[in-house]
Image (tube, rainbow, N blue to C red; front, side):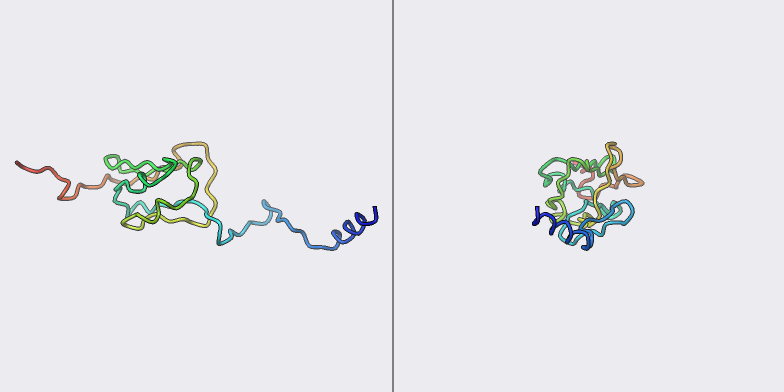
Length: 124
Protein backbone atom coordinates (compact mmCIF):
# COMPACT_ATOMS: atom_id res chain seq x y z
CA UNK A 1 0.00 0.00 0.00
CA UNK A 2 2.91 2.38 0.73
CA UNK A 3 4.44 2.18 -2.80
CA UNK A 4 1.07 2.99 -4.35
CA UNK A 5 0.61 5.95 -2.02
CA UNK A 6 3.97 7.35 -3.15
CA UNK A 7 2.94 7.05 -6.80
CA UNK A 8 -0.38 8.74 -6.14
CA UNK A 9 1.23 11.65 -4.27
CA UNK A 10 3.87 12.19 -6.97
CA UNK A 11 1.18 12.19 -9.69
CA UNK A 12 -0.74 14.97 -7.95
CA UNK A 13 2.05 17.49 -8.54
CA UNK A 14 3.05 16.55 -12.11
CA UNK A 15 1.97 18.17 -15.33
CA UNK A 16 -0.65 16.36 -17.42
CA UNK A 17 0.80 13.95 -19.95
CA UNK A 18 -2.17 14.19 -22.29
CA UNK A 19 -3.70 17.08 -24.22
CA UNK A 20 -7.29 18.20 -23.84
CA UNK A 21 -7.84 17.76 -27.60
CA UNK A 22 -11.06 19.58 -28.38
CA UNK A 23 -10.10 22.52 -26.17
CA UNK A 24 -6.43 22.68 -27.22
CA UNK A 25 -5.53 21.94 -30.86
CA UNK A 26 -2.96 19.22 -31.39
CA UNK A 27 0.23 20.14 -33.22
CA UNK A 28 1.18 17.50 -35.81
CA UNK A 29 4.52 15.87 -35.16
CA UNK A 30 7.01 15.89 -38.06
CA UNK A 31 7.36 12.11 -38.24
CA UNK A 32 3.61 11.56 -38.64
CA UNK A 33 2.27 11.22 -42.15
CA UNK A 34 -1.00 13.01 -42.52
CA UNK A 35 -2.90 12.91 -45.78
CA UNK A 36 -2.39 13.12 -49.52
CA UNK A 37 -2.97 16.52 -51.13
CA UNK A 38 -3.39 16.96 -54.89
CA UNK A 39 -2.79 20.22 -56.74
CA UNK A 40 -5.30 19.48 -59.50
CA UNK A 41 -4.32 22.54 -61.57
CA UNK A 42 -0.85 21.11 -62.29
CA UNK A 43 -1.98 17.48 -62.53
CA UNK A 44 -1.94 15.97 -66.04
CA UNK A 45 -4.06 12.98 -64.95
CA UNK A 46 -1.46 10.48 -66.15
CA UNK A 47 -2.62 7.73 -63.76
CA UNK A 48 0.82 6.77 -62.42
CA UNK A 49 -0.36 7.42 -58.86
CA UNK A 50 -3.34 5.13 -59.42
CA UNK A 51 -1.09 2.31 -60.63
CA UNK A 52 1.37 2.78 -57.75
CA UNK A 53 -1.23 2.82 -54.96
CA UNK A 54 -1.02 -0.56 -53.15
CA UNK A 55 -4.58 -0.34 -51.80
CA UNK A 56 -6.26 1.04 -54.91
CA UNK A 57 -7.43 4.15 -53.05
CA UNK A 58 -6.72 6.54 -55.95
CA UNK A 59 -8.90 6.77 -59.05
CA UNK A 60 -7.95 8.94 -62.03
CA UNK A 61 -10.39 9.72 -64.83
CA UNK A 62 -8.73 11.55 -67.70
CA UNK A 63 -11.91 11.90 -69.83
CA UNK A 64 -13.85 13.22 -66.83
CA UNK A 65 -10.98 15.40 -65.61
CA UNK A 66 -11.13 14.11 -62.05
CA UNK A 67 -8.74 12.71 -59.46
CA UNK A 68 -10.27 10.92 -56.48
CA UNK A 69 -8.97 9.31 -53.31
CA UNK A 70 -10.82 7.13 -50.86
CA UNK A 71 -9.53 8.52 -47.57
CA UNK A 72 -10.52 5.45 -45.57
CA UNK A 73 -8.59 3.13 -47.91
CA UNK A 74 -5.43 5.28 -48.08
CA UNK A 75 -2.60 4.07 -45.82
CA UNK A 76 -0.43 7.19 -46.30
CA UNK A 77 2.50 5.17 -47.64
CA UNK A 78 3.62 7.86 -50.09
CA UNK A 79 4.09 5.48 -53.04
CA UNK A 80 2.04 7.82 -55.21
CA UNK A 81 4.01 10.97 -54.34
CA UNK A 82 7.46 10.00 -55.61
CA UNK A 83 6.75 8.94 -59.20
CA UNK A 84 4.41 11.85 -59.99
CA UNK A 85 5.95 13.59 -63.05
CA UNK A 86 4.46 17.02 -62.24
CA UNK A 87 5.02 16.74 -58.45
CA UNK A 88 1.42 17.74 -57.82
CA UNK A 89 0.95 15.19 -55.01
CA UNK A 90 2.27 15.75 -51.50
CA UNK A 91 2.04 14.19 -48.05
CA UNK A 92 0.80 16.86 -45.67
CA UNK A 93 1.18 16.83 -41.90
CA UNK A 94 -2.52 17.47 -41.34
CA UNK A 95 -4.61 14.44 -40.39
CA UNK A 96 -7.06 13.24 -43.03
CA UNK A 97 -10.56 14.62 -42.84
CA UNK A 98 -12.96 12.03 -41.56
CA UNK A 99 -15.83 11.39 -43.94
CA UNK A 100 -17.85 8.43 -45.03
CA UNK A 101 -18.96 10.09 -48.26
CA UNK A 102 -17.10 9.03 -51.38
CA UNK A 103 -17.61 12.43 -53.02
CA UNK A 104 -15.47 14.19 -50.39
CA UNK A 105 -12.25 12.79 -51.86
CA UNK A 106 -12.95 13.80 -55.48
CA UNK A 107 -10.95 16.69 -56.91
CA UNK A 108 -12.02 17.81 -60.38
CA UNK A 109 -10.64 20.13 -63.01
CA UNK A 110 -12.86 22.97 -64.10
CA UNK A 111 -12.61 21.66 -67.65
CA UNK A 112 -11.29 18.29 -68.87
CA UNK A 113 -7.69 18.34 -70.11
CA UNK A 114 -7.11 18.77 -73.82
CA UNK A 115 -5.34 15.87 -75.53
CA UNK A 116 -1.71 16.47 -76.32
CA UNK A 117 -0.60 16.37 -79.98
CA UNK A 118 0.89 12.89 -79.50
CA UNK A 119 -2.43 11.59 -78.12
CA UNK A 120 -4.61 13.15 -80.81
CA UNK A 121 -6.03 11.30 -83.75
CA UNK A 122 -3.63 10.42 -86.52
CA UNK A 123 -4.61 10.72 -90.13
CA UNK A 124 -3.65 7.65 -92.12
